[in-house]
Image 1 (cartoon, rainbow, N blue to C red):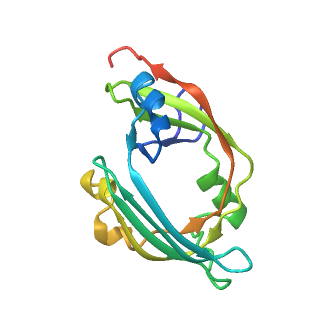
Image 2 (cartoon, rainbow, N blue to C red):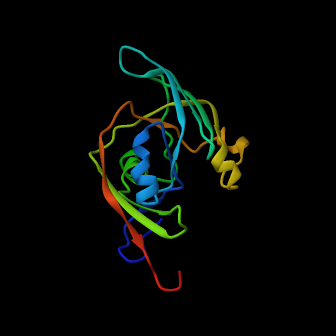
Length: 171
């Protein structure tokens, strides 16, 4: 997505689930589309830090999700349509601004910052994201056939808060 004012590459946030009481301020004060959830992880890593098993399940009244991945040293990179691996990684991992519909229906925006990410390819065994199917963005069958699968064990990022409420005329 391209911001028409700045020409910056951005993302559209559908929402976030959080397994913490700390969602109270973002959800109720700033009207962010953050939702309470119970999130369970079942992960195992090998000596090199690759996930021999990565399972994550989210239970939420807003949307459930279930994903199962694994990694091996033989997982290939898939970046068809990009000139090289570098441009692929920057395109997918470096938009720093995002837009979303606030819980009150208004348009909102916030920014994040993170250092260079170093994701590695993985193999998808199972995925089911209720929200994507419910919004008719990606049906369950197509969720099992993603363009690529990348995972990074840990990264640090900053969310610049409070977010902005964008009040454009006619909206």
